[in-house]
Picture (tube, rainbow, N blue to C red):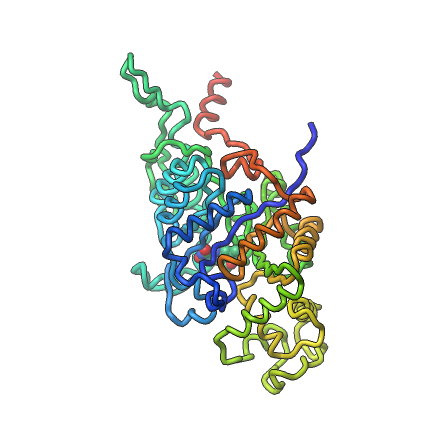
Length: 455
Ligand SMILES: Cc1cc2nc3c(=O)[nH]c(=O)nc-3n(C[C@H](O)[C@H](O)[C@H](O)COP(=O)(O)O)c2cc1C
C-alpha cells in the first residue's frame, strides 16, 4: 500500500483582535470581534472555504485589565464550549478545538461536555488539555493556591484517563432501539468504569453515548517535561511556541521519539508550532504593515525583559542607535543571533536599531514566530519548516483581523495548494479524518471480544 503524501495541517489560533498587541488599533481592524457572533461565524466560514483543519480557541480562568497593551485579545473572550457549539452550527467540515483546564474541573463534566459537542459538530471536536498557567485562577475557584507543575500533571493524567474511559462507557452497539421488542438499550454494552484513584472516584457510565469519533482527539502544549510526556503519550497534536527552526526541529524529534517509546506511531502525533504570518501583496506592503503595527504599540520601551532575553543589558543604549555587539551576550549558543536575524528579516534590513529589535520582541513575546513577507516568502518558510521536520503544520495566528487572515487565505494558501503541500478539498468530515486518524475500538468491546476468544 502506498503511503498518502505528507501534507501540511493548518489551523487558526483565534486572537480576535489579532496576535500583534496593536492589531486592533489599525484603522481597518475589528475591535469587538470577540463578542460578535457574526464576526466569529465569518472567521470560521472563511477557514472552511480555505480547507483549514481546525478552528482553535484557547482559554484562561483569570484576567486583569493590565493585559490590555500586551495581550488584549486574551483579556476577555467567550467561554470556549459555548462558543464552539455556536460555531459548530454554522460550519460543516472544519475541526473545532475546545480548551478545557483539568486543574479546575471534574472529569465527568468534561467528558459530558466534549461528548456533547462531538455530537453537535458531527465528530469535529478535539480537546486542548491544559493545566493552567495563570496562578490567579486559584482565587477564582476557591483554592488557596495554584498547584505546582507536578501536582497539576498528576491530576491531569488521572483526569484524562477517566474521561477516555467514560467516552467508552457506552459501546457503539449499546442502542438496540427495537420498536417491536421494546428493547432500547442492551445493558451488557453499557459499563461502569468504577474508577478509584488518588484524586478521583468516578463510577460512570457517562450519560452521553459514545461520541461519534469514539475517542475525541486530544491536543496539548507545554514546555515542561511532564507536558511533553502527556503530549507524546496521549495527544494527536502538540502545539508549540518556537521561533527558531533548529529549536523546533529538536522539539519535533523529541516528541516523536517519546511517542515511539510509548508504543505509538510517531506519524500520529502532529507537531504544530504557532505562526504569525504578516502577508503583503508585495514585500514592501508587508514591511509597511509591520511598521504601521509597531508604531501603534502602547509601550514605555522598558528594555528589561528584552535585555534578559538576549543576555545584554540594553539600558545604556539609545533606542534609535545600533544594536550592541552581540558577542557581549552572556547567554550560551547562537539563539541571540537568530532572534536578531528574525527581527532584521521582519524589518527588511540588517542595520536595525534597539527600538526595532524591541518591536520584534514585543510582537512575539507570547512565543510564536512572526514572519513578514510577500506570499511566496511566507510559503517558502512554511515549506522549509515542514520539509526540515520542524513542523507538521501550523497554528496560524493572524497578526490582525480580518485582513491578516484574509490575505493569508487569499494569497498564501493557493501557493501551498499549487505546491501540493496543502489540500484543495476536504476528503473527510471529522477531526480525526482531517488528520488521517482512524476511529479507535471501544476498550470494553475489545475486552469482551478477547474474553470471548479465550472461552
Ligand atoms: C499554542 C499554545 C496554546 C496554549 N493555549 C493555552 C490555553 O488556551 N490555556 C492555557 O491555560 N494554557 C495554554 N497554553 C499553555 C500551555 O498549556 C502550558 O501550560 C504552558 O506552555 C506552560 O507549560 P507547562 O504546562 O509544561 O508548564 C498554550 C500554549 C501554547 C504553546
